[in-house]
Image (tube, each protein chain N blue to C red):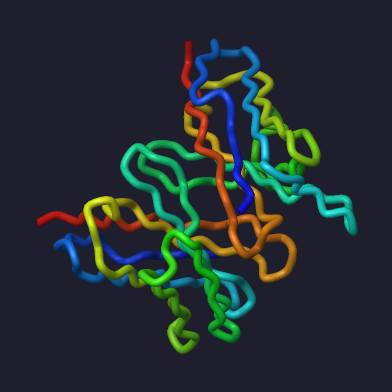
Length: 120
Length: 114
């Protein structure tokens, strides 16, 4: 069974950095892209970026460029999303999700989500 | 970037009735070389991650009830639930995966029971 298990909830102060993990099992980590998606409270889904675990290449959404870093550790089959210079608007649930690295790029499955609260 | 716009933002339908959600993309997501529409639909229930329902605009994911169907091509797409069940109350999102440099979702449609 394919599973994506994310790290637990975080509370951070404005200006801080948060790093969330997403550990995968049930498939070959390097065969699929890993995406990160932000969902603010009561809001929709916003794609943040992806990493290709095979070579570490990344693509970031323009909105998050410069503040987000997505990495993949093939020794532990774990992907990471680091978001810096946190502000209150970054309070959200963050999801990891996989997609094929070919043309079939829909997102499936998803992790359970990690709540990040930014508050002074 | 491709902008995805869903309509309506919310919808109330009686149990057993048809629900229809629309999704429009700012540019075509039909790839001419394979004649496939790079469009997916997801269902999200409160406190849960999104769940894939449909990909290639009309292919139902394994295990998804056949009351869910997707249609459309190019820039205009529709998700239809033929006979609404109580467990279908959720927010539904469309997503384009045509532009692999910038994936994008619609704003979501909240489906409730009338």
